[in-house]
Image (tube, rainbow, N blue to C red; front, top):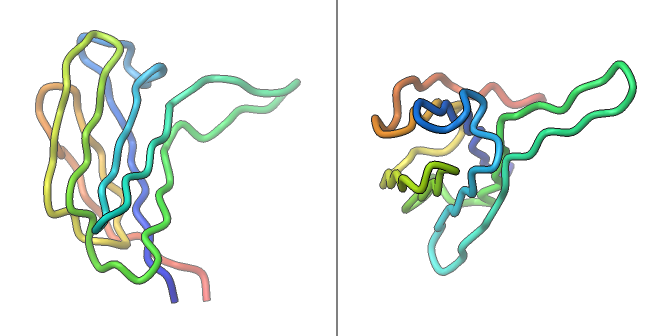
Length: 102
């Protein structure tokens, strides 16, 4: 099975939902980039958490979040199969296991 990481960005100087933030995750020689954006359809909404597939990697080497405020947060050595919350200017503020479907 492949591993993954789910990230919730919580803004303090930027907006609370982190909309507009850019996340760069480095896993080995690969760098993956995602943007947090708002948008939905009629009576619907998108999950603002960002999912990264890590394939067989057991951890992400580095996560960099470029916030709309201009602040940059960097976290290193994040274990796979977790849901983490990263708060602007404070780093990881919450971690919980990510239960994969069987």
